[in-house]
Structure formats: structure tokens, C-alpha cells
Length: 404
Image (cartoon, rainbow, N blue to C red; front, side, top):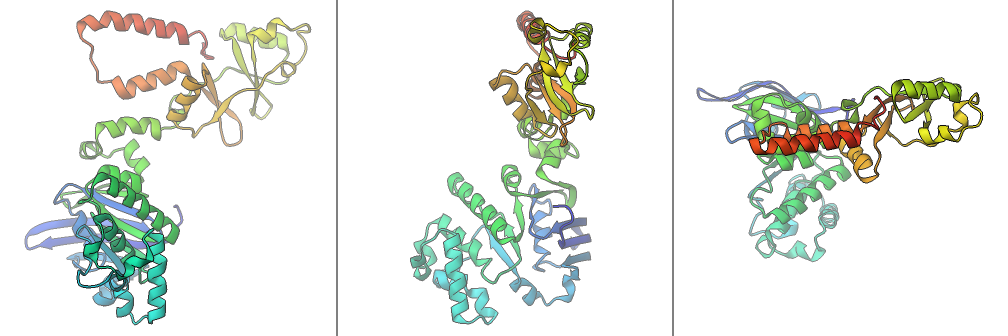
């Protein structure tokens, strides 16, 4: 989302309650239309930080800007009417119908009845709730339905910012998953800026464009889910993420550039004779062909050489099609090519098709081993079996590697 407009900005924000520091020197930028999760353990300051956005809590020092305007200069009642708010307890008025709950803020803003009803109908449709429920009372709805109403109520006055304070924490896993997908889709469709407080890392990773990790009132790390998973700032962040998620991230986010080795290649104007000499010297049975701009155009294997009659012809006359992947391909997808499609090695090209490396079966195996088994120490009676297995694996992958 680089270059997007900044909707909310914290500048050196601190909050103290008496002598206790709850939030210390927080600096955060939240872009328009983004989904930002504040996460941390209990007492980390995440909820206090979020509540300062709509002035439910005022900062002790520092500034909070919305669209470049210091919120201290905005009447707090007017400010809150411009910002939607969803809490875990839902907060629907039990004595009011669903329609009256949804249109509560629009009525405070003096919307006419027709405009309010149209907005209520539109939001009920987005929430996949039947229109007939508008005349029902909250007690007549399931917990999941009530929470959907709580979400769309926060959007009823066309608020551009929505604050959500652990809204799904009390729900069962199935309902929570459905609501997470609903809110994320709603945010994308309506281009809302959502600040979401959670203690659930899976929830943050699934929903956020940006994650802000807090501890003891300070921002420990902030970035995209990918940035945080690949480069956790310290042991606290690693512990919060969890070892299993960190291991999985290697396959989900790391690109094949981490595994690449230099390819053995020849240009398309080289003769078949010189190509064969190159293959013999580098001890490969398959070689890659590039043009004058280093763009990958084909490959030649040892079998093709055995059928040649004129060794002085250009190697391009006998080359075959070549399978390749982009250099931003994830390791997970590279595993698919090697394991499921049976390739011994895969060529890697950049966005212009230029050959930049290869990924071998051996490199894939090593990556899996490093991610899942690097801390595993076999028992004494397992050592001999592992040594035999490693030798067998090496025999099956070593010969075909292009760099040998």
C-alpha cells in the first residue's frame, strides 16, 4: 500500500494513569483503507492505544492526527460519531429493534427516515441477514447474528474509521471464522480503515495488512504479516508468534532466491560441439540455453546430444522447452514443482525472463530439514539409520544437480 494517504498517525504518544505508564512513546502510521491489528499480552497497552483514537481516553503527551488534524481540536462527541466502534459485548440496545440499533447514529446526525432505511437495508444485505430481522429485538438473534449487526451498525453513518476491540473473542470457532471473513470482505468492499485489537495471533495474521505488536506500553514491532513472520524483532515477538508459525512462514513467504545456486548455461549461438564440451567439464547431463540478453529460452539434455549428426550446428536447433519459475515464487510452490511434478531442478528467472539461478531437489530437501528438524537431536540408535538415509538421498539427488 506504498504511497497511500495516512489516515491516522500517532506521534510520540504517551499515556499515564497516576504514576503508572500505560503507553510510552508510540509512533504509528495507519494508511487509508488498511486493516491494522494491535496485538499483545494483557496489559500491553493495545486497547488503551486504540481508545485514544476516538478520545475515549486522551493521551497525556504527544499527538494523534486523523487526516492531518490533531484530534484534540475536534469535539469529542462529534469525533466519536465519525468513528465506528465494535466491542466484544456487542453493545446492542436490548429494548430497541435491530433497525433502531443500526440507525442510532444516523438519527443523531439528523438523517431523514428514507436515507436511514436505505442504509439499514443495504447493510443487512451485506451482512447476509434477512430484511425481516429489522423489526426483531437483539434477544431474538443468535450471538453470531448479533455480532454482525454490531459490525454493520458501526458502518451505518458511513464512518471511514472503525475501531474493533476483540469483537470475536467470546464466539465459538466456527462463528468466529465466518465473522472474520465477513469483516475482512466488508472492509475491502467499502474501503474502510479498521483498527482491530486482538490477543489471537492467528486472527491478526489472517486479517491484517499491518500488525502492531505491543508489550508493556511500547510498540515492539510493526509491519506486514510477512515482514513480522520472516524477521521477528526479538524473542518476545518470536514467542508471541510461536515456533510452528515461524517454521510455516519459511515455506509460505520466503522466496526461492534463498535457495538458488548459479546455473550452468550456454548461449543459443554456441555450437553443439562446444555445448557438449561445456557439459562434460561441468559434469551435468542437462544444460540451460539463454539468448544474448541472458533470457532463458530452452535446455539441452544428454539424450539430445546422442542423436546429433552435425556437431557444428547451433545448439538452439536441438534445444527443448524448459520449465521455470519467477524469482519471487515461494518455497512452498517450488516444493510442488519438485515433489508433485517430478522435476530434479527448476530454473529461476526474473521479471524480464532472464536466467538468475536454479533450485535443486537437494536444496529443497535441505530447506525442509532446516525448518522442521534443525533442533532435533537423534538418539544414539537412530544415528546409523539416519546416515544410511542421508547417503541414499544424496545418491538420488546429487547426480542431476546442474551445478555439479
